[in-house]
Length: 405
Image (cartoon, rainbow, N blue to C red):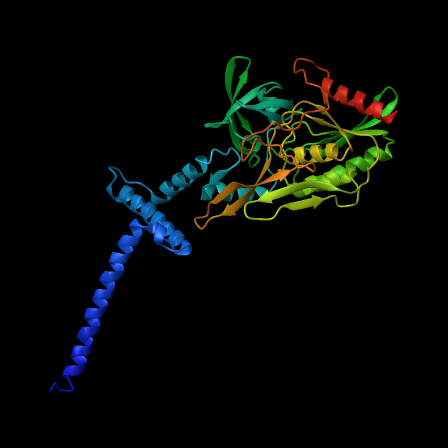
C-alpha cells in the first residue's frame, strides 16, 4: 500500500503529464485552426487574422533591422510603411503625417500662418496662379498670374488635391519655400520667404450694372469664423443699398462643413443644406440654421474649377433650393470629407471618412475618393487669362441684374 508521502508525488506527476498533454492538444489545435480559420467563430477568426498580421509586420521589421546589409531605423521604416499603406488607397485626399509633420501642422494651426501672397486654382499638373497680391513676397519674387506651380520643394503637385499644395506653400513667417513653376514652356525655380499676410476671408464691394447696385461678395475659404465674416459683408452690402448679390466662390477650395452650413444659412431661411454618410453610421442631414439675413434678394453664385468641397456644398444648396443661379465653369467635383486621427507614435492619419450629398441627393465626386463631374453652371462663363477684364464676373453681373429688374 503506497505511503502518504507517495500519493502527493503521484498526484503532481499526473497533473504534470495532464498539463503537457493539454498543451500538446492546444498546440495541435492551434496549428490545425491556423490552416482552417473558417472553422473558427467570427470574433475569434477576426482576432486570429489581426494577431497574425501584427506578427508578420513585427517579424518583417525584425528581419530588416537585424539582417539587412546596413543599419536601418525602425521608426523610419514604420513611417514609410504607413505612408505606403495610405498611398495604396489611391486617394489624393488621404495622407499619413509622420510625428514631425503632424507636430508642425498642429503648431501652425495655433498660430498665424505665413504665406507668399497668391490665390490659386487646381489643375492636373499643379496649381495655377490666379492672383498675386501687391507688395507681397510672391510679387517681389516675380511670380505672375497664369504661372503653373508644379513642385513645392521636392514634392510634385501633379494629381494632388488643391489643399495639399496650398498647405505646403504656407508656413511660419520668415521661413523660405522653394517653388518650381512653368511660364509657358519655360521652367523656373525660385525661393520665396513667407510673410504674415492678412487677407480677409470675406470681402465686398458695390458694382453697378445698368444702374443696378450689386454687392460683389468674395469668400476665399471656410475656416473658423468665415461664415460670420461673410454675414458681416452681406450686412454691409445691404446697408450700402445693394439691390442684388454675387457670391464669388472662385478658387475657394473649401474647408469646414460647419462654416458651409453657416454661409448657406445666410441666404436660405429653411430647408436642407446637405447630407453626410460615414461607414457604419446612419445618414446625417444638416438643415439651415434659421437665421437668414438675405433670403429674398436676387443672388447668383460665381464658380470655377477651383471651387471645391465646402464651396461646392454651398453652391449646390443654393441652386437646389432655387435660391441662386450658378455662373462660371464646372466646379472641382469633390464629394468626400476627411478627418485626422492621431496615432500612438505621435503621427496621424488624415483620411477620407465619408461622403456628402446635395439636398437633391447627388454626390459631386466620382464615387469614393475619385474626382467627379462637380456642378455644371446654369450660365457658362469661362475666364480669359489673357484679358485684363474679368469676363466671368461681368457675366454674373448681367445675370443677377436681370433678376433684380
